[in-house]
Image (cartoon, rainbow, N blue to C red):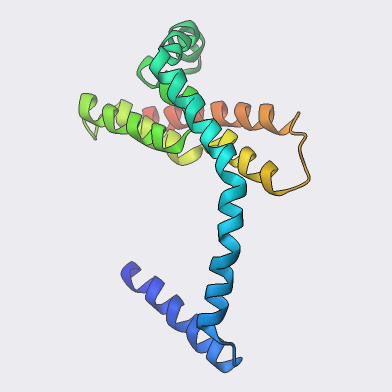
Length: 168
């Protein structure tokens, strides 16, 4: 059934646009043209975040931070194997999924660690990426409260994720 949802939506939108006498192709092309300046505007912000994450991982800083924060995360119930994932998730989605792949390879897909990693990725967001895209396209530039609250919510979500995986 799920394989039919997108084609049904596409056909419904196409039929609705015909009913409203909207030239679907021209409208699509106009929207695509507007996306080019958006990509150009956002690219420097995204490149900065990706370079920073790559430098953090390559330098070993994430491993050092994982070692430093290990007692705190263990107290919260987050396994030490997932500390790097919890620390990197606010910065990078693709890097987080690469870490998830390595967790699967090392511990197996059905292990407690892997289940926790999956739920952590499902209940958290790439906070700095979203903030970067948001601030690059709006007049709002001050995220003094939003970033810390989002980071706390991410850690709380990770704690609850591990608790739920332990119970289930």
